[in-house]
Length: 113
Image 1 (tube, one colour):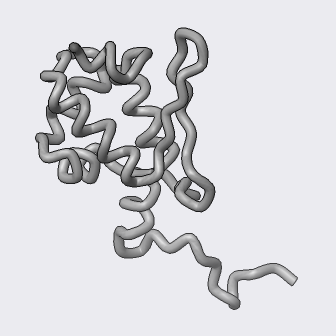
Image 2 (cartoon, rainbow, N blue to C red; image 1 turned 180 degrees about the vertical axis):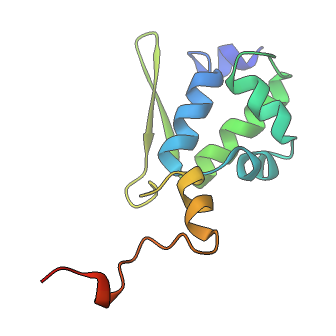
Image 3 (tube, rainbow, N blue to C red; image 1 turned 60 degrees about the vertical axis):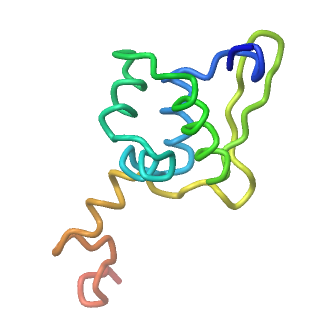
């Protein structure tokens, strides 16, 4: 039995990228949680490779543990996030905010009024 037969509609790179975006986690964070390399996640999401079924399952499981929900509706795989698990900022935005001098807060002296 293949992973396709056990999970229904195919969990593909677009599904992976979409779930990651909803959760606000980076490729590196997913790769660490799934026990694979960031390049494999990148290549999978961009359609460059089809990883072994065990790696695909590990990525999906890591996303589910982080709060992603995959629901089969007819021949589609719908992606959602459990309440309270979604990220208000993308992984890229978090990295940008963490850089010195990139505060999103407005100092009191610079406010109008």
